[in-house]
Image (cartoon, rainbow, N blue to C red; front, side):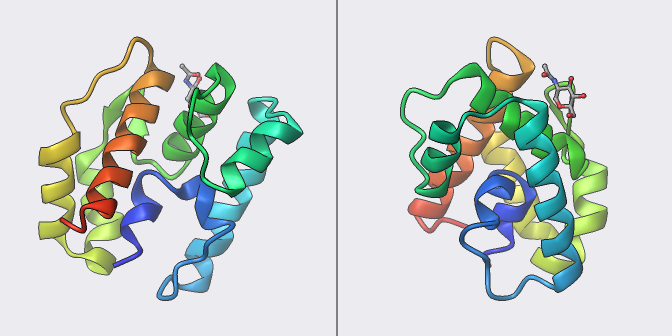
Amino acid sequence: MNLIFVIALSVAFVAVATPLDLNEDIIKLIKQHDEFCTKENHLSDKEIAKLKVKDFSSPSDNLKCFINCTLEKIGALKNGVIQEDHVLHVFGPLIGEETIRKIISKCGHLKGKSDCDTAFKLHECLEKLKHDASI
Ligand SMILES: *[C@@H]1O[C@H](CO)[C@@H](O)[C@H](O)[C@H]1NC(C)=O
C-alpha cells in the first residue's frame, strides 16, 4: 500500500524510499517532477538533505511549495484543492478507490494559510495516517 504516498505526500520522498510495488512509469514520472520542483522552488542543499531523511520540522516556505509543486504536477492538487476525480481515475486502479476516499475524507478538508501551506498540511495528514497504519 505504499502507493498511497505517491498520491499525495511523498512524491518528494519516493525518490528516496521507493515503494516496492510502484510501476516504473510512475516512479519515472515522480522523479521528473521531483527534479523540476526542486529547481522551481529553489530548494537549498540543506532542505534537500532534510527531505531525504524525511525531516519536516520547521518547514520553510520553499519546502511547502515544493510539496505543492509535486502534488500539482501529478494532478492531485490544484490551487489548494484536491482533484478527487483525477486522483480516483489515476490512482484508483492502483490503490483502490475506497482507500483514496478514506484519505480524502480524513485529510481533504485541511486548509492552510496559502496553497503551499495547504499542500504541506495534506502531506502531514497523510504521514500521520501512514504512521497510524489506518490506511
Ligand atoms: C503550486 O505548484 C504549481 C505547479 O508547480 C504552481 O504552478 C503553483 O504556482 C504553485 N502554487 C503556489 C502557491 O506556489
